[in-house]
Image 1: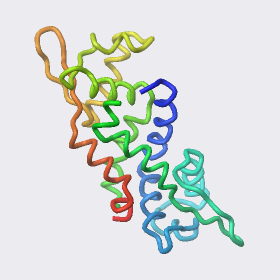
Image 2 (image 1 turned 45 degrees about the vertical axis):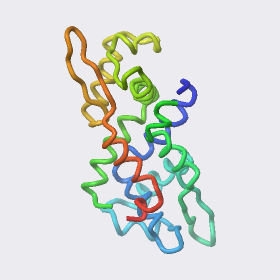
Image 3 (image 1 turned 180 degrees about the horizontal axis):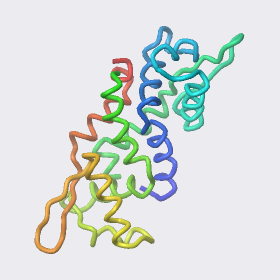
Image 4 (image 1 turned 180 degrees about the vertical axis):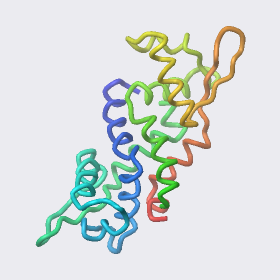
Length: 97
Length: 97
C-alpha cells in the first residue's frame, strides 16, 4: 500500500471511527428509500441538530455519504463505491496487495 | 446498530484511521509467514522504533493484530476475525442491520 493511498483510505476510516458517525451511517442506509434528512436522524440521539449536522458533514467530506437539497432539507444517502473501496482493504487479498 | 456495538466497532475503525497504522497492517499481512517484528517494519518508514511500537500497540489494543514474544522480538500477525467483523459492517446487508 503506497503512502498516498494510505492517507486517502485512513481519512475514510477515521470518519467512521466515531460511534455517532457509525450509527448515522447505519441509520441512513437503513432508512426508507436509502436516504434520510437531519429531521429523520435527530430522534435517535441525545444530540442537537447542529451536532448531527456536523457529523454528517464529516461523513460527506470523507466521501461516505452524499447530500441532495430538496426543499427545506438535505437528503443524505450512502455512497456504496466508497464503502466497497474501504471494505475491500480489510479483506486478506487486499491487505496483502 | 446499537450504541454499544457502535462504540466497539468505532474503536477498530479509529485505530486504522491513521495512515501509518494502515500501512503497518498491510505490511504485517503481506510479510513472509504473515507475521513481522518491529525490526522488519521500521525500514518502510521515516519513523523511530518507539514510534512504530506505539502504533503497533494501538493496533494490538484494538484487537486488529496480536503479538507473540519469541527471543528478543515480538512478532505481530493480523487477527482475521477482527478484520472480517469490521469489513462486514461496511457491506450493504450489515449497514442495514
